[in-house]
View: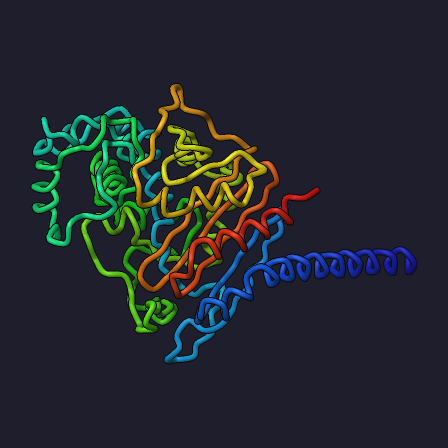
Length: 381
């Protein structure tokens, strides 16, 4: 009996030692790729979370605020910028899964003031995939209210037929999210905070950061090192307004890797968001998620997240029928506000994912290069 007990203890200690070694390996992989970015781009603080074959590691660097010197932790809140669009895509899928809308509906079905306008020729799917006909990256500066938004959309003139051209656009996916929320009978922010985030088990993810949580909200810094946080705007919640932590976001990535643990309607919503609806070069556009066949060369990933794709018109081929989610694709999304930068990616076939959150808008090529190096190592046999 004594020998059996000693053997059992030895087994426990050996397993613990192996797990510690594995965790150390994960930290080293992250450290080699991401630590150099802090000095190279004067980043005050960063959190990088990875998941690999069921193991999770969160590595933190620097400070959440240069003024208070508070260190970054796994629970520090960062602005996600356009990574927020992945939640918008899923909320749209959720409305479809519940039978409240379809991706073939048109804006005028929910906003009668837009009936007969140019934007009403586009479908919700085309709004959600930036192929509505050339909506701009941002609303004009004087569009500061719901009424001005309606007026501007009523007079908007497209530059292409719906479905033929992708032009990355906050107004486009913002309107998509707004209409999906309308079909569910509530505003987007309330639906996200009370229904969407809780179903993913996210306890530190907000559109509107509650006062008791403000102490965890990192301070962002602009290019001149001035403290800055995101400004309110039309469709801000839908397009760039979510705040979250590395701990919550890696949980979100794990749910996207293995959505079977979600309730059936939300599981279906994730499938809808991860489907492929349009092809632009080597990139496949989902709802929020942008996808590539794996393995993908760094140059392709850089191009798909580069200026040409985010600020120019690009020919789009509609995928009909849509391509279902694929385990062999890399799903990714970049995000930024004036004071924050983010990148998330996951590869279902290898059961690996990554989250990077920083309180400076560091260059996208640097984020993508570091993430690609980490994912490439994690995905190896």
